Amino acid sequence: QVQLVESGGGLVEAGGSLRLSCAASGRTAGTYFMGWFRQAPGKEREFVARIRRSDDRTYYADSVKGRFTISIINAKNTVYLQMNSLKPEDTAVYYCAATVNWRPTDTVSDYGYWGQGTQVTVSS
Image (tube, rainbow, N blue to C red; front, side):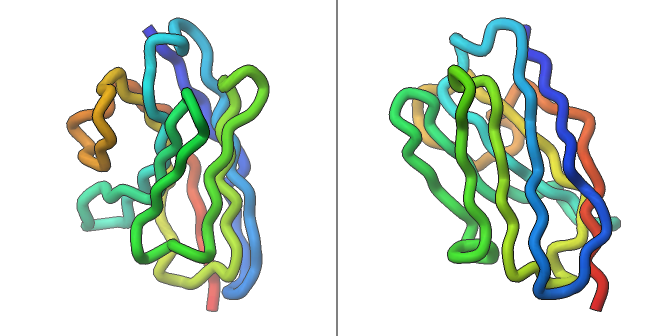
């Protein structure tokens, strides 16, 4: 089993920055990708970014490309999401996730481990 705990959410003005953290524990060595997803009220949970644990290769949703950066440190057990140039549209609960799938995926159902989420609110 893998346990994930997010932190770092909060209120920020449009154009500002915020960094989210995800602390992973348990059988993390069995996971191939760590990812960030977000869910706004009344909307489906959507993919934001992922990183491959073996070589740190990353992939981003078009909506955040160039503004957000995912990284992993501390023996691959701490994942960050650096969010810059934040927009009100970025307001959502952000979730850290992990998958045992070896093939790259941005599908919610492919990620078997999830944190409880952290709220990010961007004001205009």
